[in-house]
Image (tube, rainbow, N blue to C red; front, top):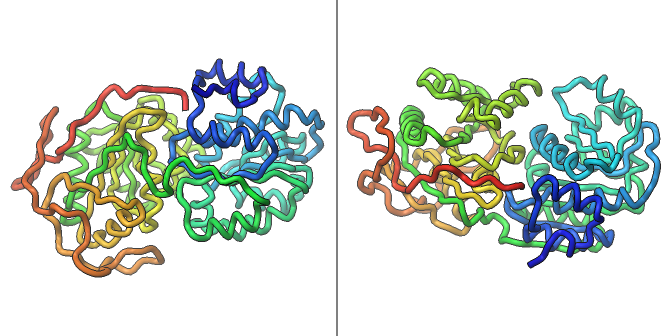
Length: 437
């Protein structure tokens, strides 16, 4: 069995991660860390929840430890770019665990926080800076940060950076970095643009892949429940949540206003629910995540802003109240459950307008997601939006088995609408195991 010691990590770093509960490296860590320690560029492909942060973070910390270069005013030794505030904070929390007792400084810069405070702490120099691209460019324009001292670049969740249009920001940032440099790119999916990205920013990279791109973790049990409209989705969600009063549930919606409205409806039904989305300030988002992590709220309603930034081992259920318009985002959403070796359930409520989206998701994942219940609706063209997929395509599509009998229910008996069966159909799991991620 491979251990972290076998990977060639420094004893001080081994002591820090051992104190944090890290025991056995995950496959992506075991394969990526030795190459990264040799200074090679790395392109890592792995499912969410498999420990990608340690795969790049541990070798990054060790190389900075051994360089003995002093911090310079406004300077940065290593830059980690991530697409969302939540993911930046999650990465930084992990890195701070790794550098405990090593006198290395990890800083974060994200939008929604005081830029003046960020200017202040950057003025003293940083060993590892974790940033969202937009705020970093704001600081570059103020001449508050020097990137020419950075000889390490990490792009985490690079596919979402492409989806969110950060490629233009990356083209602005990358030329400012020092050379020669080591670049590492990590992602859970592999869209076509990723190859172009790797050719532009990586030099003879070692490709490390521990699962087929677009594949969900094996311990996630997926299912589709047909719904006739939004009101039917809400009814189904309330029933599922009532059926699992002890679970931690993450609910994904498509729009900011829709998520806020759904959260308030759940609170009105008696659930301890909070929400995060783009209209929330950084402080509000952090408080909501803390309430969810600490168990003060057991339902978190979010847009895709949270799909890459939540690393909470106790999430037992992911509900896709609305399917994402980018199929790969479905993989990241459901990857918020079954983390660190635990089990998890992922349930999608699908209307006739979303059958085309469901078909695209199944094509990316190369599976047919089983139907849990409900009567398959007539497929209709989705309303036109600013972007995204969907639509008819050929045939009826969607998973087979629409119009199945009422699924089995269990546990608490929530109030159900007249003429509708109770959601269920799969055995729920309680008391999820918690392990170090």
